[in-house]
Image (cartoon, rainbow, N blue to C red):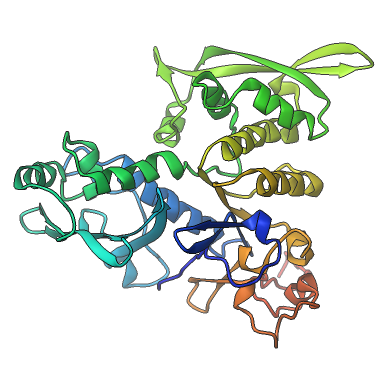
Length: 411
C-alpha cells in the first residue's frame, strides 16, 4: 500500500535556521532520518528512491530486457500487480511532480506535472502492451513540435521511461532537460552501509568537484590524528560475481579486465614524527569517515541529495552527531536521507526536529508503515516527553518483537 515520506517542514520553529530551506513558497527539510527494527523496511525506502534514479538514468537497451526489481512478496496477489513510484521535487525553483507505474516487463503509465504556479501537465505516457509501443501526449502549456514528439516516442522503448528516452535523443525540451538534470546532478546514488567510498571520493577530487584540502580539513576536525593523505590508481582483479554490483557505480572504472581502484595512504603525526599507513591498516571508522568527509564536502559545496543506509556504521555516536551537525550548520541547499539504528537521536531535541525523524513499522501482513514523530498528537508526545522512553515502552512502534531468551536446543 502507498507510503509517503515527506520533507516538508511542519510549523515548528525549532532549529529552523539549520534545518529548513525556503524555496518556491515551501519549507523543505535538509535532513530525514528513518529509524525502526530490522526488516521493517528502512532500507527498502532508500532502495525505492535509488531504483527510481536508475530507472531514469539507465534506460534498458532492448525491448526483451526485464527490469531488475521485486514487488512486495508477502502476498499472493502483489507479485502480479504493477508497482508505482512517485516523487515531488524542486529544480531551479520550479516544483515538479513525477509518477511512474511499471511491471517487470514494461513502463505501464508515466506522468509529469509542473507548478507555474498552478499545477499543469507536462506529459502523460501510456503503453500499448500488446504492440509494445509507447504513446506520449504533451500538455497544452508545453511548447514542442510533432517531429520532436515522434523522435521521443521512437526512442522510448516500452520498458524505458520517457525521461530515459529523452536522454537518448537529440531534441530540445526544456522541462524534460530540467527534470533529467535533477536526477543526474541533484539526486546521488545510494550509499550502502558496507560501501567503501574511497574510490568515489577520490574520483570527485580528480574531477575537481571537491579538493583534497576540503576532505583533509574535515578529517582534521574528526580527531583521527591525520595530517595528510595520498593516493594513486592501481589495477586490481575483481571477482566476476562483484561486477554486477558495480554496474551503476558512477566512479567505477574497468580496464584491461581489471578494476581501477585507488591505493590510499594516510599520514599521521605523533610527537612531530610522520607515520604513513596504507588504508588496509586503518580502522573501519577511519576509512568510513574518510568517505563521509568527502560526502560532507560535496554536500557543502554543491546542491546534492545523498541517501545513506545505516549511517552509524563504524562511527562512534559523537562522530555520528558531528557529521550531522556539520552538515546542518554548513550545507545550504543539500539534503541527506538516512536510515539509522542510533536510539540516541530519539531523545536529543537539542539536535533533532520531530518532523525529521521517521519510524518504520511492520503491520500484521508484514508490510511497512511509515510515519514521523511529528505525526503523534499531544496525547502521546509532548514537548516534555522523553522520546527514548516512549519508544522503549512501545508507544511509538518500530520495536523488534523478540521472544524470550531461554533456548533449549534439545527440545
